[in-house]
Length: 486
Image (cartoon, rainbow, N blue to C red):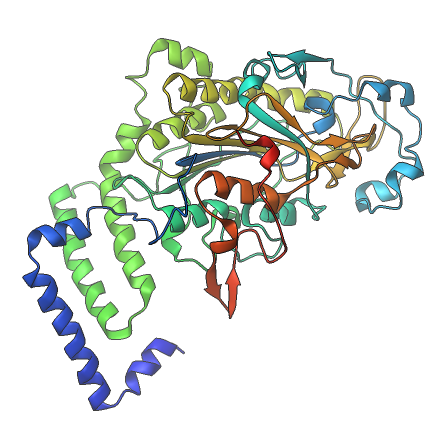
């Protein structure tokens, strides 16, 4: 059943002609207002909602680097030198305090403490602690705000990733990128407002599946769903014209198709028809804009060298990072890079090293590149996973090998760029990096902070669906993390 169609079929003759008259009057009025007004109305393909942003934004665009699988905070950011004295000792029950753990380690006879085998030192003028693994990111610590006390209620990957990206463990909600595309639109008429990359990752990695719900528009119009650019073959499937089809022929076909869709829309009023028309038009524009976007021939050698040897390998994290910068330069509102393989239940030292080698240089280069171009002043960069890793080892523990299970109680994320107080370390954990000691940051506090920096009051940003005012930050009380704001 189609409620819109049923409604129109059940209209009386008087209702039909009354509404038709109003539509005809609107058409006549638009015609009388002249061509300039009509052109002005369609000048921006992705306009913001009326009244948004709520206040002057610090950030105009967002690049979100999601390390899918949960990076170990103990081996990267949360320095716990005192753990060396607890090597292979059981985690004190007073620390765990009866908290749930996954079935992957709940059957172990012991929960032996595994200190990080990696050395930590302080970097930058801020003296921020970081692991020796972070050879390149350690160079930008004075530009980032590190949050060590992010926490979530989800203990498994799929619900945790859904929570991070949509503010809820329940599938079907709108993602962060979709919310921003919906509310703030985009400055580009030739590229999507929200773009997603799912780059390659080291072959030995323990990778979790990625689900499109992480960049889906959920209950919002489907035109706000993230557009995934592929790393192999055509960046977007079926955007290119088939052999023998000239662009002028494609334009003629789209004009005819648009007229048919407009007729259908006038009959049943389904808003998704307008979305379909807009998507066809965007695809036509992308036939020109995407090849120009992916052409790195005009990038300087210094820039390419800064990103690293994989910068020209399509589909790599490095290639995705430089394209993220090029996208936001061209007006795209949100770019999301989801890098898989961070789920290290065993053989963590080797596997984590591989993940860092795949991403560290390009991550730092992206921030430095944005800064050199003056783009970091109004671009927000976010880095993190969906939860953390346990202080105790999963499986066999030795001095140079161990694994870590899922740990939702506390983990590390960082932000850099517009409105962020660089060189800041926020929040404290206990001696085992197992519980929060000071300044907790809920996932939706994090999302509220992102919205705040983008000029949006999260409590006033909602969408009516199924009788509820849906919000990215949910119905519980959450607040921006003021301690990291400049």
